[in-house]
Image (cartoon, rainbow over all chains, first blue to last red):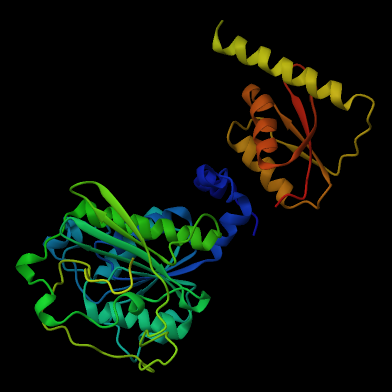
Length: 280
Length: 105
């Protein structure tokens, strides 16, 4: 691939960075990233990945744009209310960078469709807002050997990690073996979120995705970041592969995908689980 | 001293040092790149892209006429690990930067 004058100009400020250059930009152009959710996390992540020239972006979301999304889901505009989120998202990404191929999935992912959806991608970003999807995405990534960049937010807090069990690292279930019991899932009234927090964590996910594609810097695999927006405090923990993990451990009990049911919707936040198992 | 003059003097110092070092050597050029009319950072970026396409130890000669590029492009190429063989004035407006593709990546 020879760069056009326009491409050189569009990507010049990142191509001149050590570790990128023409080779890195080609890696980005060839990369295929799947983003679960065109919401608070998926929006900023998708926008920055498209701007950076990631060649193919997959967007999955079964929801339509509603006015209460617009406080944080920056893929969508007021005029998009009523449109499927993936269509609104595709329009935004293509207007930002027409070179990016945006594949959309306006359907609810489940145990029967997710593996075939993510199979064609190199990397998965989870920006889902509920635990059934979060566990489904993790398990599917494990079975399909895809790197998973996981972000979660609730109120003023955020979490970030990268899961590469196929490369010896832990999976999401090494930290959180099962979805939380219904009583621990915040009710709709409790589950607000500050838009900027979604932006910060979504962009951390985009940043980690770019690092994974380019093969630069230190991966977040085996590391777990907690972010407190009110104190502007970061806390990092190491997390190891759990030999007793029900999915990627030595004697796994989970051999196929599970469709959990959500007892109470926390659909305004990107499912953030707080009780960790193996974090030190 | 104004910034422009400062830059000019800086260029001269770089030139003298570079020319002194390569004096008496004959350099074989494998590829020429005309970047006249281009400004920074495109001068550096297009030079780097051309080098990425070349074989190790091949030599690229780049012509620039954007004054800051005369100093900044060799500096950035050196930071990337490329070897600068020569920087010289071609005529009143143009400069030639001769750079060797090196095995550092």
